[in-house]
Image 1: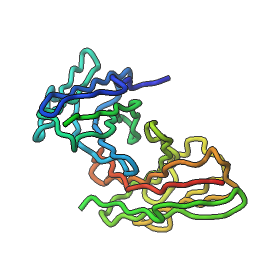
Image 2: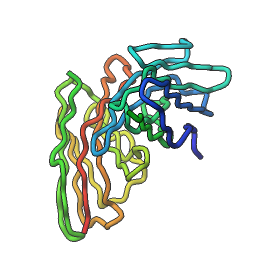
Image 3: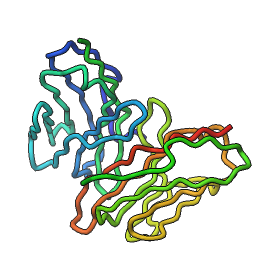
Length: 110
Length: 114
């Protein structure tokens, strides 16, 4: 049973555009929602995270939007750059372990 | 500093070999994790140690044997692996002293079983 559904599977965005990745979860016990960025051959790096008592969190060009009633959250990358090309994983945690989405491969074209 | 280090970076081993992966962190984190990641897939949890005690084993085959000798070090002993065990093995740590949720990953060990 996949508890965190992530879409799209892949995404191509032009430089300067907005990249949007969506996730939906089922387990209402989840109370922490991080996004990880992973480059090929590297470990996942924590990008930004949110708790369900907040509807939006912004760090630089990265914003998480959170809709508790819909059990959905999304990552927005503003002014996308070629260096943002990577795989992005959403995740959810409620009992000290992370449940990951399947990942989104983002390609930002120059 | 949120650094988790892993050695070796790459490992090639035969199915009859015994080898070990090492993970180290000096952030004072008291929870440490082993994950397995296949290409184009998310990390899969294998083991969790809390305060140097094994707290979660995700039904991992016994050919993988974790060890946490102290609060900074985590090992994964490998024996009689199969080619399908080839993957990126990731270590992560978390500061559970104040119930922080953030997990910090190391760069991983790329394992190839021949």
